[in-house]
Image (cartoon, rainbow, N blue to C red):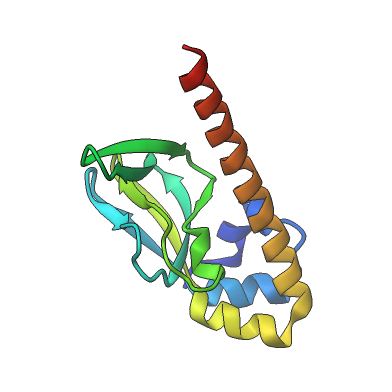
Length: 151
């Protein structure tokens, strides 16, 4: 468990009342990952949504024809990653690698998904935040793609 006050620091949890923050805090824990280690790989079943507290995380993919890993985006402190833990079929669509020692809040999504069935407002609020995260990632990848074709 983490404190609700810790969650309150992050914009992803804005708009949530105290009771919902307490519920989320009970489903969360702090974790550390060493530089070079993976949080998950493409295709893994995801159980946790992560909020990066310290460090840097690279979202990566492996080029099938070249067998080399490329960085799709970089996660900075305060940002959320592993959003697929809340979207069926709950499988990673890329890998996440710690580029520096990282501290994260790991939010266990199993109780959260169950709570969405009862508390539609919580589901809506968090999925709306998640949609913004996905929108920003798609925008960043689009800009990277445009840059690759204009060089």
